[in-house]
View 1 (tube, rainbow, N blue to C red):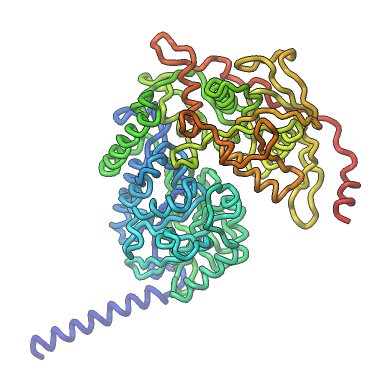
View 2: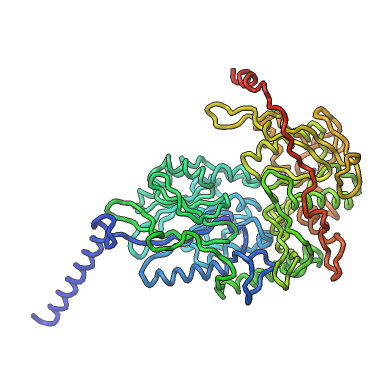
Length: 640
C-alpha cells in the first residue's frame, strides 16, 4: 500500500469517526453526560440606563463602597464566565429582557442621536434583546434611530431585537430593526430559536406607542414557536418583558417553550427558576444589580432541556457590586458618554450642574419613594416642588400638585462614604425623577396646568387608589391638601368569571385643601373641606404622564371621567395644558432641581433638605369605617 493510499484511508477513517461522534452526540442515550449539549445563558433585564453604579455619589474606583450595578462590572463578569466556559468548549449567550432605557440621565442623550445603552451592550457582546415599555419613552421614531446603533438593518446587526407580538406598520423605520424570530446556531451544532414578547401590563403603561400596536401574547408566541420549529430550532427561548404572571399563561397555552427569560417586574431572582410544565422561567434583577446565570443541557434524543446550576454549584444570580472588577474597555466607553452627559446637563441647567457625579445637595435621611400604597418622603418633596415652583414662575396660586408613583423611580440615597457623607449628586436625584420627554423632544415629562372640580378630584383619587391595587405606578402623591380613605372600601365585589374587582367609588372619605402659604403644615385651621359634590374649579399641576391617561380612563371607565379644563371651565387638550417658561416646556425634573437648590445652605454653602422632609406629614391617611353592607344587592343590580 503506497503513501497516497494510506493518507486516503486515514482521511476517510477520520471523516467516518467525526460523523459518528456527531451522530452519537445528537441521538445517543438521553440525559447522559456524553450525549447532552451544554450551553449557558447570561441574562439581565430592566437595566434602565444604569451604566454607572449607584448611588453614584458613593462610587470610588479604588476603595470598597456600597454601590451596586454598573455596565463595566457586568462586562467583566460576562467576560470571566465566557473565558471559563471557553476552556470547556461550552457556548455562552447574553440576552436582555427589555426596559434597557428609562431611568438614569444617560437616556437623555437619545434625542441628540446618541445610544449609550445599546452601543455599550453591543460592545459587551449581547446577542439578543427584546423591547420593554420604556423603550417607547421617546416614541417609535426615536426608537428606530436608536436601534440603528446595533448596525441594523445589516444582517450582522447585534444585538438582535426580537419582538414577536409588535405590529409595526409597513414602511415604518422600526420595522427594519426588529424581527419576529431569530435563530442562533452554536458551535456544538445546537440551534436556539428566540422570540420576544411585550406583555399586556407593560403595553398599558406606554404613553407614546402609536402607530405601533401589540397583538395577543399567546397567539404571537404560538405563531413564533411554529415558525421556529419549521426552521429546525432545537431549543425554544422566549425573551419577554411581561413578568411571571403573564409568562405562566403563555407557557400553559404554548407548552413547547423551553425557556422564558423575563423582565418588567423588578424581583431579585436568587432562588432556582420557576417551572410551568417543562418551561423554565428565569429573571435576574433590575438596574444591573445582578447578572443572571442559567446553565443548561439539551438532550437531543428526548428534546428536553434541563438546568445544571445546582450540580455545578453555580448561583442563578451573581451580585454586581464593588467586589466586582471593571472591564477597562467598557469603562472607557462609559466615560466618553459621561462627558457628553456632563455637557448636556450643563446646557439644560444653564450651568447649575456641570458634573453629574459632584455633590450639590445635602440630606440627613434617605428620600424614600415607598412604602407601597402610602404617602412617601420623596413624593412629598417633589409634589411640593411642583406646587411651589410653578406658583413662583407663573404667579398663579396652585391648589394641588399631584405626582404618580410610576414617575418616581427609586429612593434618593445620600452618600455614606467619607468623601460623600450625607451628600447627593445630580445623577442620583435625576435617576429617580428624570423619566420621559415632552412635545419638544427634550428630556423629562413636562408639567401641565389644569382645572378640575372638587367632584373630579374625588374621582381622580378614587381611580388612583383602585388602580394601585393592580399596579403601584398609579398611586398618587399630593401637595396642597390631605385626604383620608378606607382601604377596605376600594372594592365592592369581585366580578364573576372575570377575576377583576369592581370599584366601590366610595373609598375616599374626605378631602381638604391647604389654605395657608408655602409648605403645608398639620394645623387643622389651615385646611378647608371639599365635598364630593363640589363643582368649584381648583388649579391642579400634574405632568404629561398622568395627563396622558385621562382620555384612556374616560374611554374605559366613564364613571371615572375627568376633563382637564382651563380656569374658565373650558375643556382643553393635553398639549394646551403644558406649562411653558420663556418659551420652553417646564419639566418635572427641573422644578425638583430648582426646589432642591432653593433649600437653606449648610455651612459649606451646599443646600440642605430640611428635617421637615425626613418623615411623612399625614397628607394621605387611612381610616377604616363600617363596611359597605349593600354590595350583594348592588352586585345583583349590575349583573341583571
